[in-house]
Image 1 (tube, helix red, strand yellow):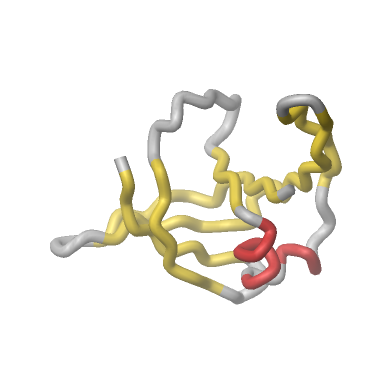
Image 2: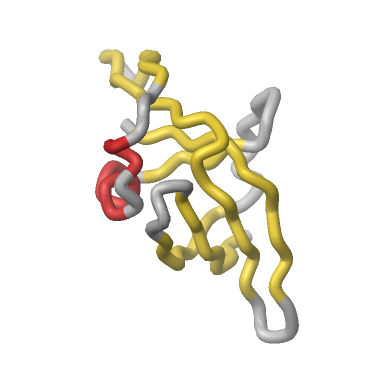
Amino acid sequence: MRVRIRLEAITGKSTEIVALLNSGAESPEPSIALPTEIAEELKLNELKAEITYSEEATTYVEVKLYKKAIKGTLLDKWRRVNFSYFRCCSS
């Protein structure tokens, strides 16, 4: 399911994107994976990140984890539903 959400980073920057929900991935806490371009737009690169690696096909990709860095708001025609802050990762 695709939905429109507004992302507000603790850096003070925000953007609206269309996101895919319920991709089947599981994590111990709410998470969102962002393309590098959106992470840079939100100025997440100014924050301290935890570095980890993810196996992608035949190689490993560096992934930056930002804990409690973004607040999400689900946007629709009738109301706005706020999420709490959640972890964000960007490769």
